Length: 148
Image (cartoon, rainbow, N blue to C red; front, side, top):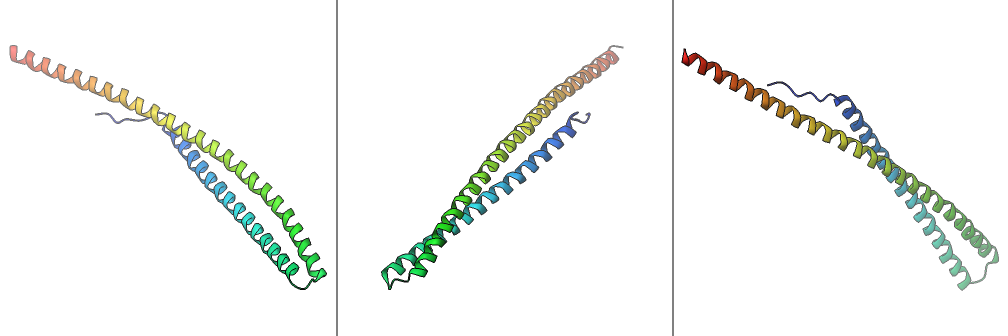
């Protein structure tokens, strides 16, 4: 029996490598989103801490300098939070782009694998036809030998 050889195996291998690369880039982008969200959560916690501290300052003896410093810190944290929200959105946008690229790469690989399967089926049919022909020739030869 002949050996099956897919003519576009090199292309399939390249497509598989591109899919692996796309998976890695997607994973990196997902990690970046998680990292940016964690930074945002830390900033929100810090702002909440400043707000709690400010409430404590209002409840106790009024220290105008500390109240002003804490209020300024809260405003600063609000600005940092707004910037971080933008960073999170950007990271999510990049993640979505990587997801689309990964999906396309997976689709390419699947298409080439289907082509390979179809070529293998054709190969198997051809091999079966060859085998059947050889058996018929062998039977005809033996039948012809028995007549003489």
